[in-house]
Length: 464
Image 1 (tube, one colour):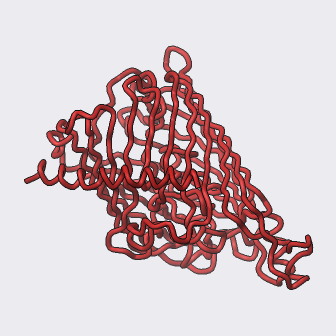
Image 2 (cartoon, rainbow, N blue to C red):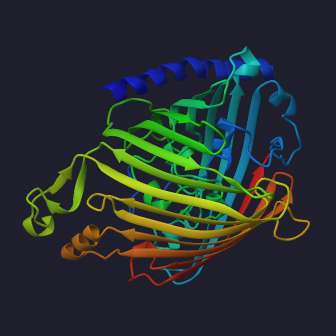
Image 3 (cartoon, rainbow, N blue to C red):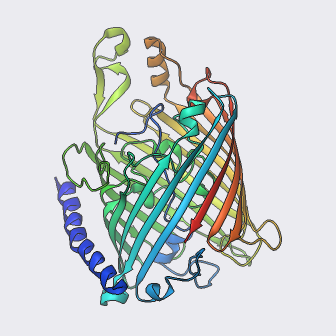
């Protein structure tokens, strides 16, 4: 009840703020949990690698953060100076299944995104307060679903999650930072993945194995991800530039915000998702080699069915009884990235190694374990400081209880899946990148009965 009152309080704050957003812009410008077999709705992260450092001392190197690069020039610079930051972005993912899987073929998916972030310190003198509203339009098809037969990992990042809506609300929330920068509070329609278990490094890769969150977490119902959100609130405390701790409370609702993202009710809510995360973000040596190390725990208070046993501890395919129920489920994760060689002056120019592990309750989680390791190198080629090369391998392990249930029921068995991905992001122009990509999937959908698949892909991203 206390959690519900807190989230409803954040709803009231947001409803006060959203009409002001619309007035300010006018005056200035006069589901279901994704399961193995059911797909994924992951998307890009909103964070920067050094975002937690902003809550304490400036991130290193101690250069002022540059403005976002735009394909059409600095058309919004004057608005930005007045506290109105508008983003219009496009992403198109094309992928071809060239061998293995269930069939050959090409599919394309795209996303158009509009975001308005208002700085109420500049607009109305309310220092530290900002509001963010994001809308997307997604369309297209998934080569993983249609050609490969893989609904565990997706080759294309931005497929799905909006139910075919022409306009879908992703998020709408308020964020307040204390004058000292040590406290940061956000509340409203807020995806868990905005702040927990994420890094923009992850979406330098296309596969949803890690973009923009480890698959073992993002496939959980309570871990809401772009482009969907529920009511939530998050508090982050950063005593200095190297350490932070954060916690949140989020509504767990299988229907999320509905087709258009505006179903903000409480009906159908099953519980509360409570993530906790602590992080260390050091900078080593005279070349200021940045690192990010995170440990997190999440508890979902929803009731979930056991994947194998009935209430008496007998496999329900044998007893014929309903599955037993569990009063909650949990996850633990460890994530790290560390720059080991610097290629230039930019905060992310250099060679970095990445790795992560997530472990979830095997009694109720279809994916009980996931892990990944990767390298990414920005500025590898002299004279190309914004290009990024990456190599990644990721693994997802299906709960042995689900595998046993499938065996007893005579269904196709799911055990584990691997993906190996190589990518290279080419900075074509200011605000425009093209990323050729290749992915090799071992046991697509976690099924040994599906031949290993090779996919060739490309991503185009434009920030107008």
